[in-house]
Length: 250
Picture 1 (cartoon, rainbow, N blue to C red):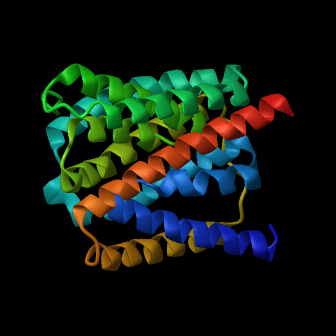
Picture 2: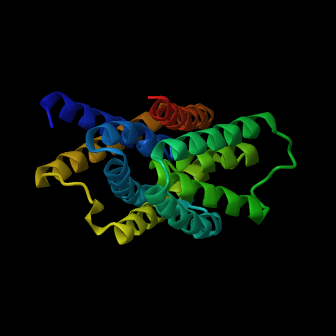
């Protein structure tokens, strides 16, 4: 790893952790592209899954009281199913094909969630929770990004931002562990080979990013944070779609 690339990894990790603390998601959306560039598709996504677990686990104690545990149980249960299926598909199908499919599905979901803003949509029905969790687990295993699917659900149902951001932290811990565990079970040698100091540097970057996010939260409103959520979700889905198309066309 060159010094320039190493600094880029640290910078993106700090920004991703800050976004995760503020909006509830954003770590994987920002870190996944550079990690896949550095380590390749499968190893890069696996590392993003692992680091995403670390980031959310460190944030969780700060937001524990705002977690909606009923919502978490429904989302997580079906996300585990989606993660298992995604791990199998990731090993058998072209990453480019799956990237196009994942990006297109999530962009469609986000678009529909912003178009359909009727008051009849709420967080009470359980089947939409299950579908959001399943798609999130699937996309997390395939592309290292599980946030856009649940973001689409949150926008559609107007899930309060504070509860949404808090609930995503234990949710990402579970889905990240499920995705990484399924991949390692299928390919025990899939863990990326990195030096021990790499983990220390990235952990320090995560802690710095969380601290920065804590400070920035005092300066923004929930509505502004929700707009950041939508932008990050769209950006992550679009990047996944574009990477897949470039791979297919090259």
